[in-house]
Length: 251
Image (cartoon, rainbow, N blue to C red; front, side, top):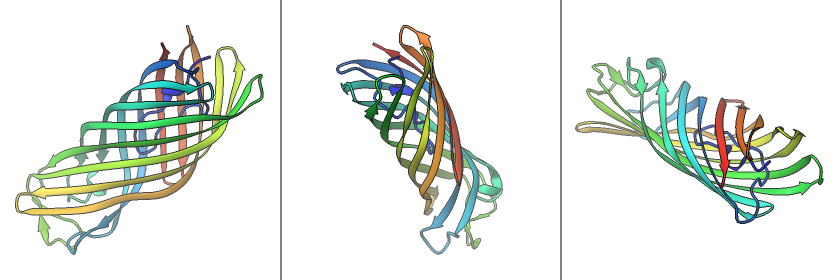
């Protein structure tokens, strides 16, 4: 099956797809999908009014389209374009008493995959690297104190979060039968985000960081006919989990 290049999405824990090249040399593919992640991150203050505290169970949602190209029979690359948003409960975002329900912002990413070994029958081994960037923005009306020591009060605060992610994964892709491919393996991930809060004459910046994380992923690619494929995937690390669904249409 010529499927899998377009299965990765963009968010803080991004679905990876089969970690092997899946397009023939000179072949194009398009795809679309949805992905979400549940994150445990830490806020690190950049100034005296910003405390250091955990930010639990923040949820990232992403909707995306991709274009892939086969550089060779063992190497392919893709471009991601889409929208992403972030949500967090009131007691988990550093603006007192108000939920963060961020609007979707533009996101983009680059993915490259390389087949490292092919047994010529049903199993391939490979590696994938992807870089993703996105964000979210919300206006929070608050009359309470915020950011640590309570010396700042936000009213109609605009909170803007911009994040980027790098991910490296390796593993096998196993063709179970003509219609089903199973894949998975370990991954290394780096996530970092900047938080900007502005309420008129008051402006605060902070960093939201997961730094390096190790995790694992498992997924399946299902043949839809005509080399089109449906991808389902689950990822897990010590601080995050994510899931995604996507469709691929080789040209």
